[in-house]
Image 1 (cartoon, rainbow over the protein chains, first blue to last red):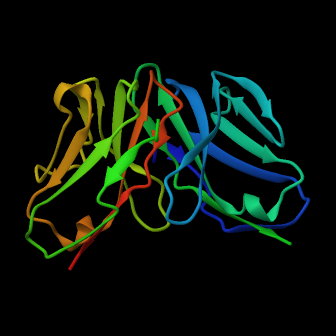
Image 2: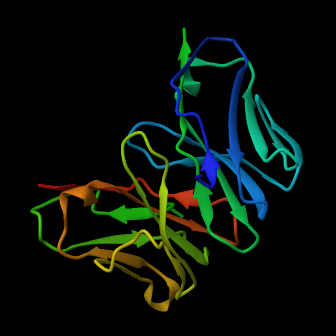
Length: 110
Length: 112
């Protein structure tokens, strides 16, 4: 079992819809949870991060962490065609390296 | 501050040759990571540094791979005796502390 599992998609949704992206993990030591966005042939860019459990909101993006279920989510409201990209979840234990999921390819259809 | 810089952007090499990539992190960042990414996959951890100390190297990494970060500034990643399976995007990232790593645009390696 990989440490971080993420459905690779692709996920296609119409413009304006709410997008839900998810990851599961196996390492209970993970404390930092991150979401990165990656456009084709570019490096990943950090969207949001949370420490331990709970929710965090930033504009149209909301990140949720449920440590009891080892499950994290990213919600995108009012999705736009410019949101089309690969979304990577990433996690880290205290003072440790960052481990990434495989990424979910998202297509927002105009 | 121009972000994380990687050089070269693209490298084509013949199988069996050695290659070296360079990463210049954001100047005040103390952590530096190297990842490898193939098509349709997420970044795969290779190694990381805290200042000049190499803290961990992936068990999946063969002895043909070596990385250095002299004086805790720029870093180099060398691959000796390249194989076709080494073809990938090599990503460098830096951070101040543990999270919010900033990535470079990567070096795309093609082994022919």
